[in-house]
Length: 102
Image (cartoon, rainbow, N blue to C red):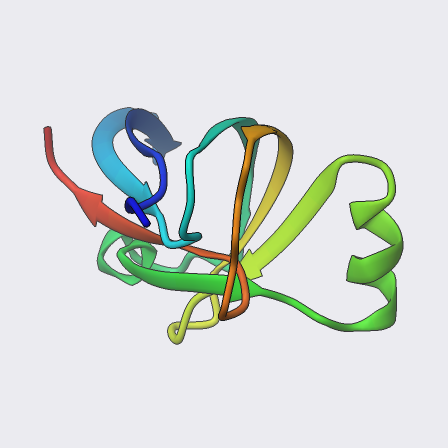
């Protein structure tokens, strides 16, 4: 099995743009194309980390609309409107690894 999708993106925070890299932790041949919002971000350093899917009722209902809610250990939430293509064989909850920098 190959690793999941890898990509570059930009965070808009405090009137500035910050490049970041992400890696989809799902196993399999898939791509992830997403846009979204960040919630509960108190400082830029809290943005990095591993984000896992939120599995509460309101989040699960959102998944039916093509939305994913992810949270990291710093309490930061990502609301992503995503489209995933290809085969994805996941053995653990879906998640992404986020690192600031180009």
